[in-house]
Length: 144
Image (cartoon, rainbow, N blue to C red; front, side, top):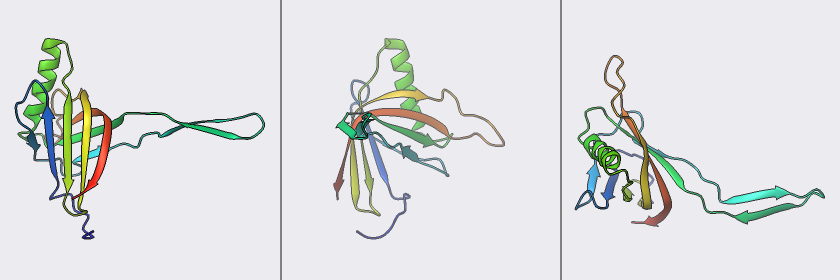
């Protein structure tokens, strides 16, 4: 590993089945946070009355929030997905890949759907970042 932890050279590519014919590279992230991926549970546990821990694997989705600057051209991608979903009354399957050059890692996101999004930017002294939430079935890490 190179030892660099910058996110400035990260590449985030999104695919949207049945809506976009080619992958879209997202750009112009929020200054404070580009995205965050929440932790997820791998096991369900129970304590027995006599003090034994019982555990089992359970599959769970991975939630991710994307933060784009209010003037990001990539906002249009999410607005298009939201508008198409509302018009067709359906969801669109998403895929993504994040390449982190600084850590020499790549993450592939599989079978996602847009579950939430801000319809407009909030306004303070300036327009604030837009937030979009995707729920993924799986995330696969790999080296690059």
